[in-house]
Structure formats: structure tokens, C-alpha cells
Length: 283
Ligand SMILES: Nc1ncnc2c1ncn2[C@@H]1O[C@H](COP(=O)(O)OP(=O)(O)O)[C@@H](O)[C@H]1O
Ligand SMILES: [Mg+2]
Image 1 (cartoon, rainbow, N blue to C red):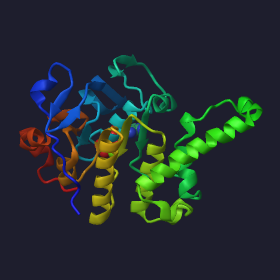
Image 2 (cartoon, helix red, strand yellow):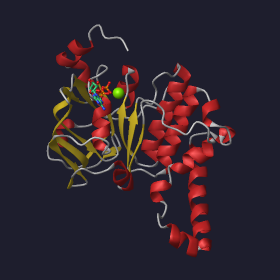
Image 3 (cartoon, rainbow, N blue to C red):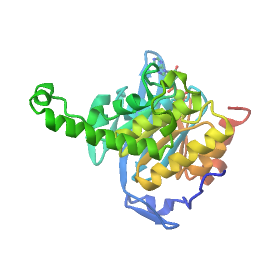
Image 4 (cartoon, protein in one colour):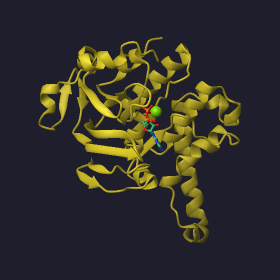
């Protein structure tokens, strides 16, 4: 089944002023995340050089580029795993300085990883519950003194987790250990864990890598549904060009740590620098 393709053309002309854009019955909001002249290096390796781009509320923003281009590093900058040596990160209008990943999570940024990061020996349900950690109260003494309240709180968390399980259609595996699941389902559980945190901004690092065609189509549909039904803004790294062109509103292209293209899928497809970077590159 083809993913339910929506009218996702973004009017780039309207983007210049930073205000909201409406087109095709779909509303793309204000800029919520701006990366300005970001440079990041590891010793002598320049992972990112002077990269600037922005992310608008409710859009699906793809990051593409050959292996080693700096895509995962960029996600790690956005959620505070790495701190760039140069540049500014503006989130919801405020400059963010050296934020830690758990603080980014509290601000509504959740992610999945290129290499699945789940507790393999734990059940699907328990793994998804860990996604609620940042929303739980951290004071154990208070928890101990207000047992009734904590139980009520846990019920609220459980209810939300059950909703995510229904949404991603994984009821049948909720009690299964993650390590026993096929790869495609593990990827879906990782998405579930990220969604359990009720993110405003969801970062997905190659959510479809290693999947067969049917699994990819399912994942595409879930990403579009998350974006539509929860209004979640999504930054997506993906190698499958047909997927990227089909579901993204705008695409930023990296190559050797530099930005070589930025625009709608159609604009990026026609960009000569992008064509050259991909010529002969098969993913
Ligand atoms: N923690 C790290 N330490 C040293 N080098 C790193 C680290 N993370 C990434 N790099 C280097 O930065 C460059 C970009 O890597 P990465 O962001 O993983 O690219 P991509 O996700 O596009 O394949 C590569 O040369 C990689 O080896
Ligand atoms: Mg990567």
C-alpha cells in the first residue's frame, strides 16, 4: 500500500519572512528550530562545517546525504548529545546553550537512533514506559510520601503508553522481549518509546534502514499519521530517496559536513550539486 500522500508543497516564497505558510489545505507553522552556522569537529575530523537551516512547526524536514555526511551528528547537536564549537541553536525563539539530552527531552525533543537503542531483555511495554521517564516526577521521597498520588500518576502514564501501543498497532507483541522481535518491529517499538514522551519535535535517524518494502510502507504511514494526528514536527534522516521525496515538506542535503542543498523535494531533485553528490552513489 502506498502511503497516503498529502499535498505537502511548501510555498518557499512565503518562507522568507519567517511567518506561517499555508498551502494545499495544510498548515506549516512558524520556525521553531533554527540552526545558525553550526560547526562541529572531532579532533581533526570536521563533521559539520557552517551549517544553517531551520525547521518549521508541523513540517516533515528530511536530512539526506551520503554516508559520513554529518547527518547523525546534526541530530546529536539538535538534542544536545554534541555541542558544536561554533554556531547558534535557537529553539522556540530562545538561544540554547550546551543543553544536555535529558533537558532537550524535557523541552519536548525525542528521538530514535540509527542503531536501535532499546533494552533487549525487557518487554515491549516496559521499553515504551521508559519513554515516559522525563515526564515523571523525579522526587523519590515525595513519591514515597504520596503513594496514592504516585499510583494515580502511574495509571496516567500507562494509559498514554497503551494509546501509543494501539496507535502503532503493536498490541500483539506488548509482552514480548524486544530482543526476540524481528528488526522492523524493533524499529517500530523504538518509535513507540519516542512517542510515549509526547514530543513536540521528533528526530528519526534512518527509521527505515534495513527494512523490507512492506515494513517501509508501514513506517511511512506511521510517520505521516504521527505528523497529522499529533501535529508533531519531524526531522527525518533517510536514505531511500523515494520515501524522502514522497513524505518530506523540505529537504536539507549534506555532503562531507557541508550543506549543498535545501528546499522542497522538487527543488532538491533538480539541484546540480545534489545530483553530482549522488551520482554513482547507491544506498
Ligand atoms: N563521536 C565521534 N567521534 C569521532 N568522529 C565522529 C563521531 N561521530 C561522528 N564522527 C565523524 O563525523 C563524520 C560524520 O559522521 P555522521 O554524522 O555519523 O555521518 P552520517 O550520519 O551522515 O553517516 C564522520 O567522518 C564520522 O566518522
Ligand atoms: Mg548516520
